[in-house]
Image (tube, rainbow, N blue to C red; front, side):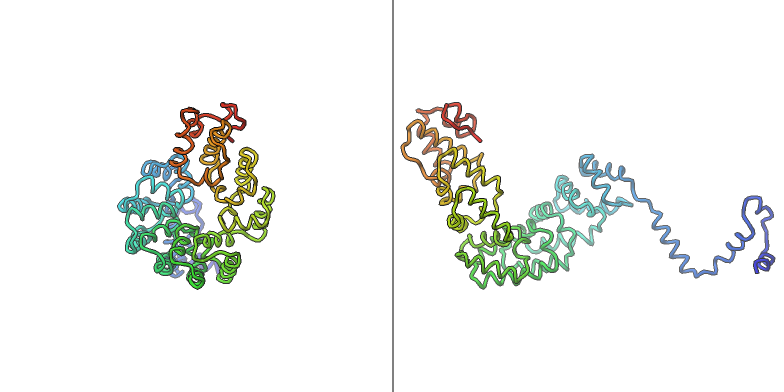
Length: 405
């Protein structure tokens, strides 16, 4: 058969063997077009598309440094996470963001967090989202803050996630609070399952009497995904548990307790109970303290131990004194507790005040009141009080026993 084909094909190239091309190869080249033309065209187009070279990482990094002022490290980091074949789309994206008031600093932060934005179609992907967010009452300055705080929002579908999420929360929030929710919400809150739980869970809260102000507080102040996206049955159980512990749904403490119960597993709860037991609290004292200040249960062990050690070992308070005023544990040890307690300690040591003040008197009062009552009043007797209060001088320098932690 091959001999027949060989004889039937004309050979106009007399010197083909001299250049290393066999007659069989020439035969194949002539009969190749019998394959469908469409298949040949698609193959050619695919090859052409694949042949478009991706811009070199170093070139893209240089572009990002010049256009956005990224550091060499950040520019290289971003360039390695996107395969850019042309700068046309990237330029359009940057142009749109600038038109909406994003500064170079804002855009740089967003690009570092979400590099794929440089590959998007600005007009089709980002412009509709910007227009929608603006249409629901988010001003351009707030839009800049929302996207900068939550860049992952750019990756979500407008029709499938962003709009449905807004439809769920819009009746619960005043317009000026919507931007805060979009800016603070975890990206996971836009998932289909999470969104299907939010509505029913909000209804559960309303059924038990949670006022709208507390619902706004939950949506705006907390990481929404840790509470409202929970499975509806689990959420109902947590709400019932908080009520059984004596919390009134009409008070803010109920929302705080719900956050704690929704966050801590049973084993973690037991660990927290054991932590406060080691600090000298009874179980009843711990539960009573939880009712007064639920969020203390989320404090890190190191934080709690350091403060309890200072109150008991340095200031001479009993563990029960702290348990009766659990709010003191939420204050900064360095910025509030030590400066104020140091001043009181000096005054007691010098005999300028006779009674031992309650922790609440020392720590709960406004700064101006404390300074006037405990610093200015005794400034002539102890000129160093201001320096001690401001942390410029230690108690030890007065020879009074304990220094700043």
